[in-house]
Length: 212
Image (tube, rainbow, N blue to C red; front, side, top):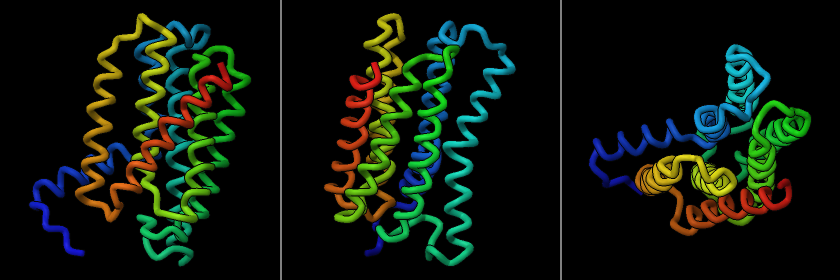
């Protein structure tokens, strides 16, 4: 069906979709913790912290994205944008592996916030549940990602009352923008967006109580 939204609005919505792609969410959360909880990274130098940030991006964004690119080039998928449920199966599994690996590594790091542990476990559960739900509908990955960030930010704010609430308020605003953007430029139904949003919220909450 042809998109009848004005071109400038579609451009903005597409830009928001790219910037807040679900693969970037772990990196955004790590940066949030670096800014708000620097004392929790006690014992490592600024250079080591930057390397830690780079490794988060490398393992949770670059490698999964590169895997999707290879699948596309090898003709396992028709589009790099994974427009069908079938095309999303292998990327789901690949992403699950990297998220589990990040959770496994976080269990051994004593020089970073414990909140990373529940966050990584949460996104692993969310991806696993997303894979299951993918059999029934093309659930929105953007909704899963941004709602996971929203809940994780709220939980950190509760865990550390000194954390500036502006972060949570900003994430609420970003969540609304991302969902609105996906309604404009994607072919997701409202149900697929709502289910994805629910998955992101619930899985972070489960991970929080399980880990902490």
